[in-house]
Length: 499
Ligand code: KIV
Ligand code: ZN
Image (cartoon, rainbow, N blue to C red; front, side, top):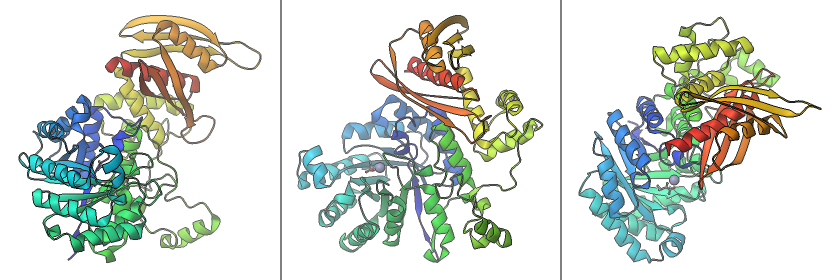
């Protein structure tokens, strides 16, 4: 019989910590429900004490999902645990994830403490959390750089205090796969009560070894893996869920099963990428745009003769449908809805109608509307609810002429207009906008990206604007790059209004 590996998803906690990836509660619920459909065992829904937004998301996710365990992160601090308990009140299955740094770097520089005192604090936190919930996971932060003998003492003490899962994070992504294997093996062999808890991996990707390390941990006996969709997370990210799920599916000889329905992998990858405005690199394993594209003549010839010559995964197994319905100006609502669904976007009839109108306009400008385009349209549709909307924008620019822009804004139903010149069309448009919205804001970052290729392509703009000491992230997409830039700017301003 094969062994069961538990999948602990931390897209909504470690993944969401990435600057620019923040989701609102409605979006988090959407991702949580998709994670439930995907079949993850545990959803780490947030760090409730860190902000009212995180607290609220843990509450709402707890209400929204049924069978996965909902987990809340805390430091080894009573106040954090109290807040997490309150946030988890509606969860059908709940877990508190508490812990503390155990490497000498953390003990000395972060806590100015001693090894014995750190064990005491960890034990106290577990005992305190156990008063409220049965399922308590303990993380030994920076376990990757913690000496194994001391790590074993910590793990033994927290299991004795009641921890049901012990998490061994390679927080800095430093370990080599063999080293991480030895670490987990050491714990299996030297912690007397290790059979009373599940060992969990939590690997970061700073040296590109997160997946290899996670797999090594599993080979050594870990039975829970902490992962994120598309491998997003702090710095270079976490272990990617789709890679671990597909490695175990492809290598049946490992005899380890998960509960993941792999056909849901591609839709959730698209959903997370579009909601978090976080593009997936084209050559990303399993979910990248090129993951199943064979471009060299030799490969194409082989694949045409027998697909197994160069393909180890059937794209359908991860939810990529080869017979994609191509969207053109003649496509109907049903085709659009189908494509939205395969990209992880669920819409009701009213929303479908509004996206469809925009789709028809775009299809008039482009020969073929791609998945990226319709995700952009679905995202742009949510901007309809913003208080400030772009009514019109007219720009004169080019060689030998002055760059001038006139802009019209609708602010909660009231109309405003202004004009300005600048040293480029975007500069002119933003200066005109700043005549209407006179807040002291500074543009910190501005990136333009074409979604696919071709001169009729949609351009995506990401912006960071600083206002009142905080940085806000905005997004705009349009076939006209100046309009996309102004929309991204307005998206940032709409966010300061919500804070
Ligand atoms: O990387 C890490 O150590 C973490 C812990 C908080 C679990 O994310
Ligand atoms: Zn982490």
